[in-house]
Image (cartoon, rainbow, N blue to C red; front, top):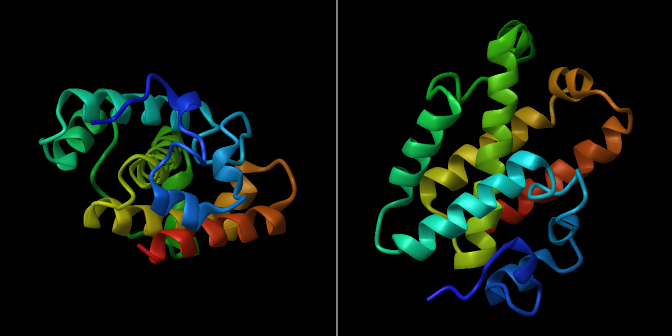
Length: 167
């Protein structure tokens, strides 16, 4: 049974041992850092929602959680595998593009929430999060998100992807 009230209760000492092993000194642990998958608002909200879900419905499938979250957040199930620059640039224009970026942030945060709490990933979450991280590493997305430091961010995203690929 999980014994956490909030994300702040999950530390390298209290998280699943597999998470502690894989994350070492990663920025993932810094929940106040925007570069952490759990540091953005959507990351923190995703963690809180997943923690509540796990505490209330530990036997239910994570697919049910994803479905409910997608419905409430207005996320689409389409275009998951789009990484090519031309198609990605086309999709990211307008409001739909913002939803793709938010959906990526959600699934990446869910993957790290599962790692911290469960020490493992649902295969679908793993696949979608790795695809989302690959999309986030593209020049198109890095430039759209802006803020400078694209190369440092690309390396950080690659680190997150390598962690998830180990599971």
